Amino acid sequence: FTYITIATFGARAISSIVNYFINRHQVFQGNTDGWTLVRYYLLCIVIATLSAQLVKWLNIAAGGVPVLLWKVVVDTILFLASFNIQREWVFRRHKKK
Image (cartoon, rainbow, N blue to C red; front, side):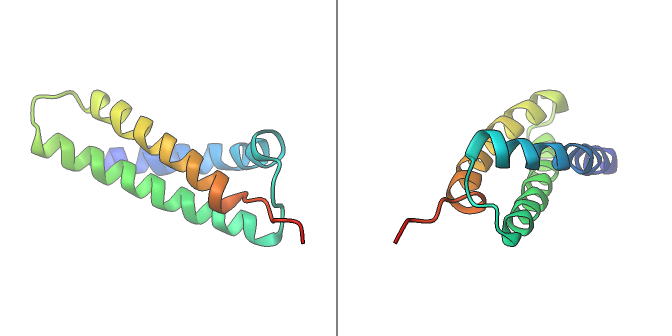
C-alpha cells in the first residue's frame, strides 16, 4: 500500500499551495499572520497521514471492499473535519478588543 501513501502525499503537495491561498482569501477571510501557513501545513500533514493510514487499515480490516470506496469515505469525513479545523484554528478570526 505504499502507492496509496505516495499518491496521497503527492496530491496534497501539489494542491496545498493553491488550496491555502483560496481558503485564506475566499473561504475564511480570517487571520493571515505568519503562523497561518504553519498551522495549515501541520493540518495537511495530519490529514494526509490519517487518510493514507485509515484507507490502508480499513482495506485490511474489511477485505473485499474496493480501496476506492474506502478512499472516498475516509476523505469525505476528513474533508469535513479539516474544514472545521481550518475555520476554528488555522484561519480563526481574532476577537476585536
